[in-house]
Amino acid sequence: MQIRIMLIILALFLFAAPLTAQDMSNVRATADLSAIKEFALDNATQMHTATQAYLATIQSYYDLLASHDFDYVSAWEADNETLVRLISDARAQWLDASVHYETNEGIIAGVPSLSYYDVWIDAGASASEDPQNALDWQLKLPNGDILQSPGNFFHYITEPALWGTHPDFVGLAVDLNGDGEIKSSEMLPEANILLSGAQGLDSATAELVDAVNSWQPTIEDAFTAMVIMVPTMSGYFEEWKQSAYIEGDVAERENFVAVSRLFDINGILTGLNVTYDRVSAVVAETDADLDAQIDTGFSNLLDYVNNLYSQEQSGVRFSPEEADFFGSEAQHRAENLVALLAQAADELGLQLELK
Image: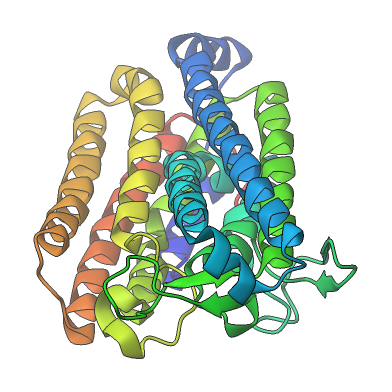
């Protein structure tokens, strides 16, 4: 989060006047907190359905390779049609799980009691990339190898394995689409890392579902999530700029190849916008004009990102310089929006648990 916006937020909350017990009771009664939980639980549950299907497909892939003693050349020569189908199915199932997570990420990452799962599943860096802040955990592979603090499941393990962007995660480069050429992402994934990643992602998702199911959301949770997650646009746009969607084949990033980061940003903002919709009545009772400004702020930011994504989908290839400009503009809009959200929390007398 930018230092300037953090100072604004802290200044607002420093002088916030707590509501009386009766006032706070009225606030909680007006906010539709159960709908926020229902939204989060629905997405987490659908994500788990996708990870279960993904794991079943990867298990079939692993078993097929095992039947060939993990001889990838032999497996490809004997069962190439089956392997192509399994990889295609697995990628579709992975994307299904990812879409439901990204729609949920604003809540999961922004609510302190749930944020651990964001680090573990989607956002945490590896120890090799960030040794001081990487989550300390181990991934044990079926062959007995252990990966220490390998980063999050989605973008450091399963995506690089399934799309072949990490050389150690590739079993054999093959012509998956049968056009006579072997291009990027055309390969047989290394079976051990693929299976352990699928097992871990499914297990972590099951834990996430349990955590969301046990979560009792508060209006403080809702505003904390929005205040923390809305002003994170510059980081996501930087990842987009460094990805293959901007840099093409020369991109050095091993992740964010399966789907554009713009699509992920849209999912995060959509979830946060849904969150605000469920508490906007509380703000409107106190300050109708502020509520309208926040609603407009969300709409403008979402429209801005959606427009860029639509252009990208239609074939427009943006330059790194344009990505920087778009990221700065999105961050500017996000900071204006979070200032309004912080003002609303201040007027409601909420005490937020900011990171």
